[in-house]
Image (cartoon, rainbow, N blue to C red; front, side, top):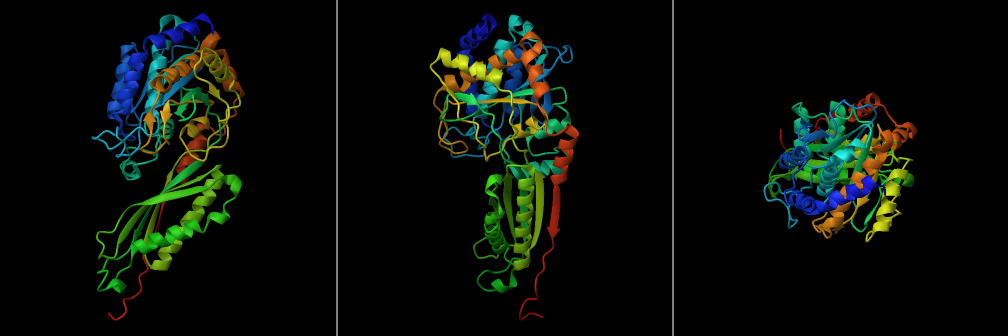
Length: 451
């Protein structure tokens, strides 16, 4: 490490108690996507302590804060990105009672790492040694949950997409960004390069419309929407053999609402489905088969069905240039006591909207641990706050500095070598092309015995 890099580590360590306290506070006050009002304000407060101004209200709750005055510097702008939202897991012991949400995804560590990195990178000597500009970003709504709320926001014209980074791209918040730096929590590892491909997906909200009747006295007079939903689930399960192994297709969902009482034939059932695959071609093919299964279930039972398809996330894109991040992790290995995990480059069947960012620009992506349990489960705990928050801040800061020092030499090289799969215009056209609503009207038969 050079002298400034040593200074970065010293600054972060000198503020470690404050950094860990911030991470702990966010962990205990989890909020769902596009509702992260407290979290967003806490981030703004930390940026303002550093003398930075903030652009707020981006995609409802998003924030951008520039190290140097916006537009004042030649050269690329690097986004240092932290996510704000959590998951609807109210049975976690640290779930926030006001929201029923908990950070079983580690996004509080991302945001904390960005705050800790900003503390060091705002040091005048450190800032002066970097070319281009840095943009510290707090982004909303990475978790694709709370779909009915997001869908209504879209119908009201307040949102375009369900994912926060997707919406920020749509609104132009990434237009002045040329390269991104991101993070994910990975229980069981100290840290590593997170540079694998991943599944993309589309989301479906499915509503079966039936006809209610007395379930004991006159079930034949009803049209059971729950039967339609059951048939749909069977139909979808029977599609599995039509998916190629190499496409890593995943189709999963749940019944989010339906029925009123045990002795009433259900006149409505609402389901949520995600359809994932390794490539856009794979998950769009799978989505057509899911639609076919849903329509067949409606036809078989006489129900009507409405299928609302919402654009999800793009497949993850591998960045071929990881030299800077690799050098940072190797230096941390030498400092101990943590060690670089090197086997984290296999395809991930999950999805996140960093894939959407990587569709447009190079993404430098890493992970850190410090957590135990299984992500997206109520057993997630922060076991090592220093690793989860402080080491994350160091990797953010050191990687950003090495990319941007010497006139942003390494960032420019990364940008030059990267082949983005899409332009912004192509991306928006693709996303908009997925968003549609299809309706199949009910086809009830005459009730036997009634004129």
